[in-house]
Length: 157
Image 1 (cartoon, rainbow, N blue to C red):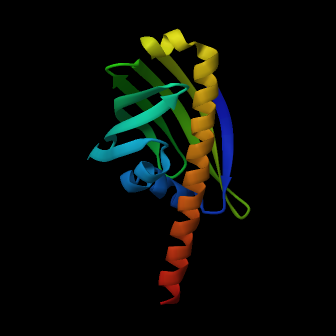
Image 2: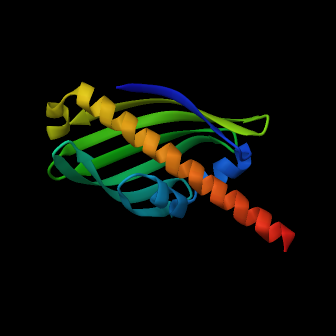
């Protein structure tokens, strides 16, 4: 499956970059994420539960960042395995560009699914992935707004 899109933020590219690399922000904004830990400067480990129609599946996953060019781009690779649902892996090229009044995040992603996930079919999985991406960006945007408000409050003293 392939996904392409962009999202606009009122924060700068550097602010978005920092939030995208903060495990606490990721834990709060990735739908179903229960654990997100930085293992090395470029590797994270996590655990999440997602709903796929009537099936709720738990996954342990690994995220690796590469091709780092802060604060403008990187590649993110994800591998997730669930004892019931199967496996998923994918990668995305992420670019951040400062734009008037904030930053724009562009992404190009691809993924593969295996096991019971594959049985559910690509169409169902694509729709589910799209909904989860929308939830993530809504939550991440809110987290960015909260961070910006806190920074402004701290700057005022």
